[in-house]
Length: 289
Image 1 (cartoon, one colour):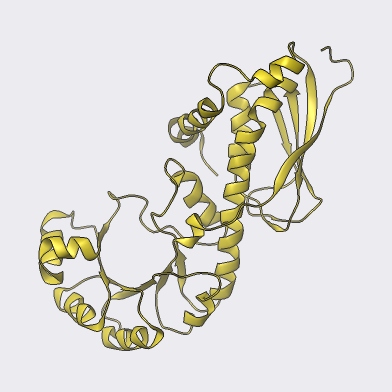
Image 2 (image 1 turned 135 degrees about the horizontal axis):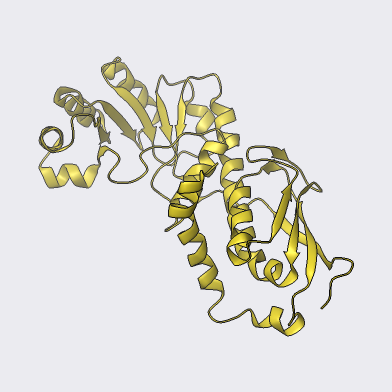
């Protein structure tokens, strides 16, 4: 859950940007059928099984349009939900509900889809001792929502952004002139509290990373046998992260490897949405159109 400070400083501007994208001057359709204030209520319904996530963002979308809008939740982030469940009731000016509906649902569906996908993959790794990590493969301006959804689904966050840690990838290594040079330059520049991770693509690079004193060695897009050899070679001298095209379909095949982490871009870039909808919008008794 986002605290009040984070909500106002980091979240509100992003939601407002999404609302501005959807409303340049007015909601023409809504103002055509509802020109005057009218109190109403709608039901938030779930249409498939999954993990719900993003309820606070859903509510905040309406409140940024009209602080008087009330959302009464029957579930909380991280709960298992199923088709037919009523998740919440939204009460307020019908114009606000209609105008904010799509943006609020976009956030909720996307975040719940990520949480659901992450939950399924975390279940495949349960008991292995391997931590499931996300990546920076997030959609622009949605990283804070997507990485939060990963944690709700049972995964863990890798570095949040480029300022969070040192990860020497192939192009960094190429720019520096080699693994050893890249590690030495990173140690000379980065704060001493930063651990240094090196992405490797074959056993020779693993050896170079070990000799250079890398703290974490990523095994990127290696075959199963290559990863086994690399892990035997590392022999506990560095933490091990497995990465590269990890999906629900193949995650179980690598759980037997003695790695510390598996990072998966699919958690944020390939998770399908969870289908939820706002239904049964109707005026409340005594409301005037």
